[in-house]
Image 1 (spheres, rainbow, N blue to C red):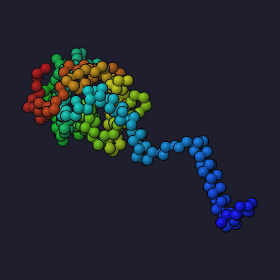
Image 2: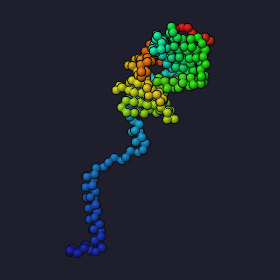
Image 3: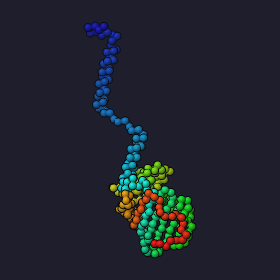
Image 4: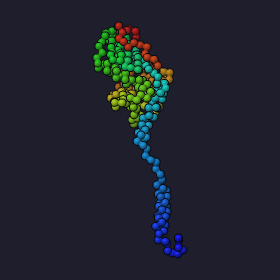
Length: 263
């Protein structure tokens, strides 16, 4: 029972003091909330990793879109490229053809002019060479060089990226560079892109010299560089025919009985 006097029941003092302390505490929390607005919680580790990967994904999509888009490349199984090549050691340009099977290590090269008639190919686990009508042995080193060329070919990489190949990781470097690494950590390709996402330079593995690309042309929905040159300009080419296909190349990868003379 409360007494109507200046004295407080001793048993009630702690309770009243406790209420007073609680009131001051609530007031303090209100002031703290006003002076220190709530901050968002730090993103979980997985989200932070996603944020770091976002620029790489955006640059990859920009690159794929510039080359015709994922859907255009996704089902491509082979590309045949015919081009005119220029080299300083030859008096005349020569007609070059490349038949590239993206599904397995098979690629065939043909180079012909009035000066030369050269052919070579790799067929999964072996290869062959013909030079001006002469059968030449393909050494293990030469086979591995052609197999590495096949693996890092720009158009094969486009197909793999369009299909989200889990063995490939795109990485955005600086303002214009996109690098593609294998799952073992080795770099497969690098691209220097313009503001539209188009490749203007391209390289493979540890080679930093690379190839300079010209403006893009179209073959159906897909796009490709019209021409290219090495960093010194001593090797140049102009594409005359670009044939992407959902089928395998209509060419044999077996060694012919003799060198073909058809230009």
